[in-house]
Each structure stands twice: as structure tokens, then as C-alpha cells.
Length: 171
Image 1 (cartoon, rainbow, N blue to C red):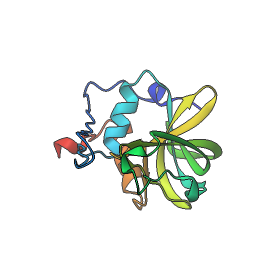
Image 2 (image 1 turned 60 degrees about the horizontal axis):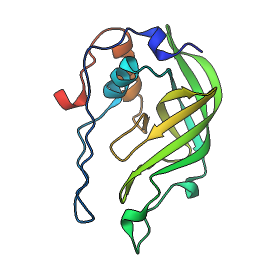
Image 3 (image 1 turned 135 degrees about the vertical axis):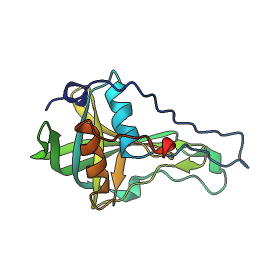
């Protein structure tokens, strides 16, 4: 499967993701983040990505949760085995059927942990790491977009075609 950076030219626009944590009483602050942001971030990265639209399957019980007695003691990173079945984005759009094992990398920033849902269709930017695929999710967004009813697909296809690819923070 060709990595994303071989499908598109690196983007000149830099997208910043900010998470501010001052202590247990603070609130998480994130910039708006959407599929075009993930596309631009993946395009400028020195990492290799593939984009898949498909149903994500995993054990939701494995998702990290902040402990009630000490919310800031949530695990900073959890790796969960998963599977995604759908279509890989190629030069012709989402056209190649795939059924891939994936590692769901779920990050927590203090008491705030990313979420995901089993059995939901996702548009996923899968990072290729050591011969495996990783879907990174964090409390501010990450690289998986679920339940968008095709809106994420349209946005990424527009980016891929060189049409409108405006970061969410500029909308």
C-alpha cells in the first residue's frame, strides 16, 4: 500500500494542536481539529500514513479510564489490538478493499482520555510503524474520525484532489 506522502505533496500549512494542562482543576483546551487537519499533518510528516475508511472493531472495555480516586493518574498511553475492514484510499479514491490488523494507540492528557467506539465506521489515518498500522487517538482529536456519515471522506478526497483543504482552526 502506498504511503500518504507518496500520494500527495507535503503541505506548506502548519497545523498546531495545543493541549494545556495546568493542574487537576484546569480544563483541556484544544484547537479545532478535523479530517483536513489530519490530512495536512500526515502530508507534512516524515512518517508514512495510509488512509482507510471502514468499520473499526476492538474491545471497548480496554479503553483507558481515569481513576475516580485520582483522575490525573490515567495511563498516558494505551495500546489496544483492533481491526479495520473497509477501503484504502488510492490515487483513485477509496477503491481498494482491505481488512487490516491495527493497534489503537489511545492517549490520555491527565484525566482526559481519547475515546473510540467498536463497530463504528471510521475514516482512519493509519501510521505505518515497524511493519504494522497504528491509529493514534488523543483527547483533542487524533487521526480517526468516526460516525461522520461520509463527511470526513468528502473532506479528505477534496484535500487529495488539491481542492479546498482548509484547517478547522481557520474556518
